Structures are given as C-alpha cells and as structure tokens.
Length: 137
Figure 1 (cartoon, helix red, strand yellow):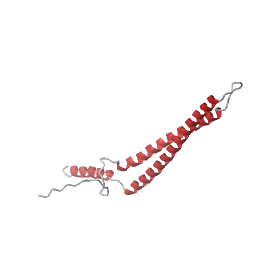
Figure 2 (tube, rainbow, N blue to C red):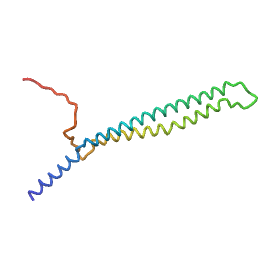
Figure 3 (cartoon, rainbow, N blue to C red):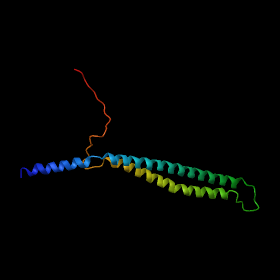
Figure 4 (spheres, rainbow, N blue to C red):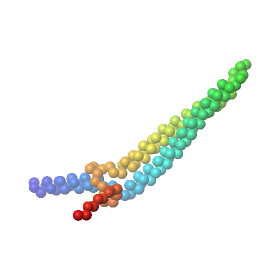
C-alpha cells in the first residue's frame, strides 16, 4: 500500500503536466487560421460598412430628390429608384456585418485554444516578458 500511493500520485502529476503542454505545430496552424479569419473579418466589415453607408446615402438622396420635384399633376417617381437601391444596399450589408462578427469570434477562439489544458503548465519553449532587478551588495 505504501508503494501504490506514490505511483498513483506520480501518474496524476505526470498526466497534468503532459496535458498542459502546448505543441508548436498547433500554434503555427492556429496563427495561420487566426490571420486568415481576421483578414476575412476586416474585408467583410469594410464591405458591410460600405454597403450600409451607401444605402443610407442613397435613401437620403431619394427623399431629397422626391421632395425637390415641383410636379403636382402626376405621381412623382423620381426618388423611388434611389430609395429602392438604398434599401437593397442596406439589406445586403446586414449579412456581411453578421458574418464579419462570426469570423472575429472564430479567430479569437483559435488564439484562446492555444493554452488550454488541465492545470495548464507552460512548456519550456514559451517566452515571457519579464523585468529583472539586481542589487549589488
């Protein structure tokens, strides 16, 4: 019984240390996935914002065009085209902005998954920023 306890404790601690170490290959893959998803996020966010701002500007131009027409004898459709294009452009921007946010969350998950482990212990290859102080006596 005396020999079983150190063996069991040794196995438990060795399991915890091996689970806490991070492999270099997965770090490189995670960084490549992170870079890809962040570039995709930036492109989709830019496209979504362009469609949104363009749509709102087109809607405003449509209302201004329809208000400035002086015709009273017939129904004026001069600003309807601008308004329709603006509404369609604004609707197109919604899925782009949503998928941009999803890609950003996925990218953050890839970076966060690097150091996950049971009582994660850093491997010897990790680098930490530190500050040293020495006092000469």
